[in-house]
Length: 169
Ligand code: FE
Ligand code: ZN
Ligand code: FE
Ligand code: FE
Image (cartoon, rainbow, N blue to C red; front, side, top):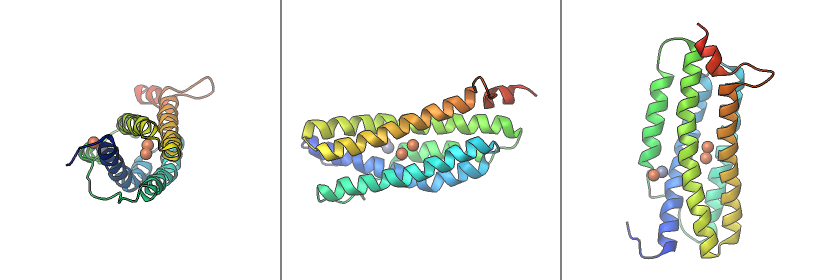
């Protein structure tokens, strides 16, 4: 890895995120399939659509700076997805499994939020204003996905949370 400038670091960080999103396009359908709550299933499917768009945004950013998005593997996302797969394969109560899927998915969203916050800031400092706004859009989506998972776990005035359902056995 050659890190001589903030631009080098920016490209490296973007490639890491591109690898992470690529892995998630494969993983999210499995998470959706493993979920038993229809709301949780929908949340995963909806975030799968967003994730495909996020991948395209990164492709657009790479094409604007004339470099390839390939060349890196996000090891952290490999690990987070492995943990998710352990949940997918687990036996037991489906409601507890749903709570565990949320726990795994929120780790993923927080990892992405950290990554996108960083590259958004670099894009701003490097003067890539279009990239900055594309990255901010993705950062907002990751934040909203995390909030959605929170509300499914905790419930609200009109709905029982998945955590409470998992408790009541
Ligand atoms: Fe994402
Ligand atoms: Zn990564
Ligand atoms: Fe990483
Ligand atoms: Fe995400």
